[in-house]
Image (cartoon, rainbow, N blue to C red; front, side):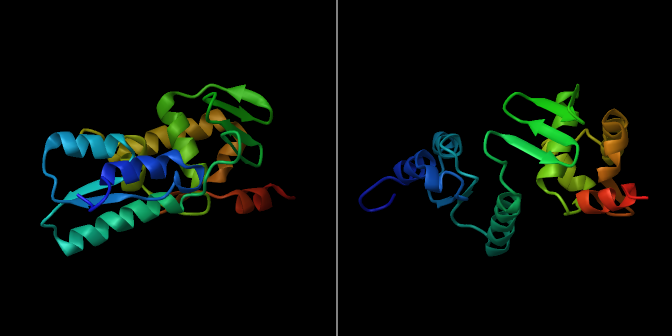
Amino acid sequence: MLPDVSGFDVLAELRRREETREVGVLLLTARRDEADRIRGLALGADDYILKPFSPPELVLRVGAILRRLRAPALATGGKLSAGPILIDKMAHRVFVEGEEVNFTTTEFKLLHTLMEREGRVQSRAQLLETVWQAQPDVQTRTVDMHLQRLRRKLGAAGRYIETVRGTGYRFRRAEAEARRLP
């Protein structure tokens, strides 16, 4: 409902261009039809808020988008590595010490999320939201059980995943490497 161009066209152009593809976009609009919401989200909007809106809710939604954007981008080629662990996101493969290790889709997402957010504590709730899309039937104990299996599959490299008592988990390369030294 912009004067000379559709907001959908602006969004499509932002997502088309390499330099603006990763920019966070929140659509704040009076367009209430479900078809408009679907179109906006399908074009790549991070969120869609209808007018009138609650300012505190807007602040929280912007904060959620900014948290997602602060996660470090994947290295060129869709690969992410830390110490002996290499994730090839495009091929959906994980290598530890050069050997491929098979992970379930959930374990892969969990490891990827932790490595991508290296050094930052991820609460169980954050992991549930990111990895499981906050399915209401998933309990926080599920996170603990998946982390336990993930560490087992990583072997010695499992030490990179720290438990932060009462808070959650953190992928931390520096301390894990220091613990390895004699």
